[in-house]
Length: 140
Image (cartoon, rainbow, N blue to C red):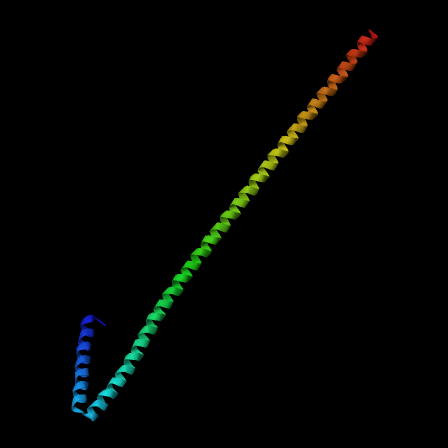
């Protein structure tokens, strides 16, 4: 309700209160009973209206809070999901890197084994030649 309407209502209420005071001063019981019943009805109506407004405000606030909380929960769930995906990506990248390194190590080991076999073959050939040279000298 706009302030101007509230002020008008306040003015009307002030006049009614003045009438009650006047009726009380003149001891006009009928007028006092009538005013009291009107006030009782108005208070009851005002209370019901205030409770309804408060409930509407509370419902609106509760709805806002529920929506806000839901949005926050959704965002945190998204963040957790993104973090888990990132962790899985990191874990996958780490696993892929470890696999690549293990394959590189295997390739190096095989290359080393081949080189050692070649060295062994060379050493065998060298040993055979050395033995033949020694045998030739011994016969010689």
